[in-house]
Every structure is written in C-alpha cells, then in structure tokens.
Image (tube, rainbow, N blue to C red; front, side, top):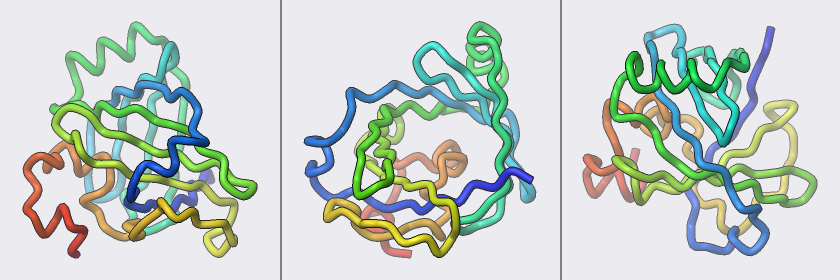
Length: 164
C-alpha cells in the first residue's frame, strides 16, 4: 500500500524565501471526491499526474500517483474537473535534512500560504523553522480538495485567523 505521511502548517512571514528554489507553477483539479477518496489531475511544469488519495483526516493517508500525458491532463482540467481549479506556485525549501514544500496559492485562494513536510513515519522528528506557524494537518478546510468547494476568498475572518 502507498502511504503519504505529511504534516501541514500555516506560513508566517517570508523567512522561507531566502532558501527557496525558483518554484514551479501547479494547476490541479478534482475529477471526484467522496467520503473514501479523491481523484485529482495535477500539472506541474511540463509533467502531469493523476492522483488517488484516501479521504482520511490526519497526517497519514493512502496515496497513489501515476504520470499521464500532458495534453490529456490539460483536457481533463478544462473539461472534466470541478471548478475553481487550484492554482499555486510550489517552492522547495531545505530545512535540517528535510525539504519543505511551500505553496503560495493564487486565483480563488490567493492569500493562503501553506507549508508541508513529508515524513517516513508519523512520529519522525524534524526541524520546524520559525516561519512554520500553526499546524493544520487535522483541519479539512486546508486540504486542496476542500479549497475547491470553499475557496480562501470566501473564508470568514475567524477561518482566516486559523480558528477551528
């Protein structure tokens, strides 16, 4: 079984930018989402994937990724995926032996900046940089699949502050 172990944090400030790479533009959409799994199409640069991810809440979920032809991904994003699509730039930031992904959202989710770290075990120790603010791994509204139905631009002031 393919398992993703990922922790997610709100980003505070721009301290991460000094160590970040140039970033890659990501465009993704969801073909389906339900109580057991979601199916998404993602384009990053000149590559594309179809991804099936378990819908369980928390840091550990089943995940399967398969590369697909770029042209077919574009067709699915335009014709089959729910809208709004997720548009973001992903930056890779090395910190203490791990590489963090910092996602700067655009479009309907502009203003949201989230950092993720993938781990080999749920209890694996890692260095948490000062720009990694509140952990939101267990809050569904920060999952990309949820941002389609309830984009950041529609969040209340309490939601934007990170209140549960």
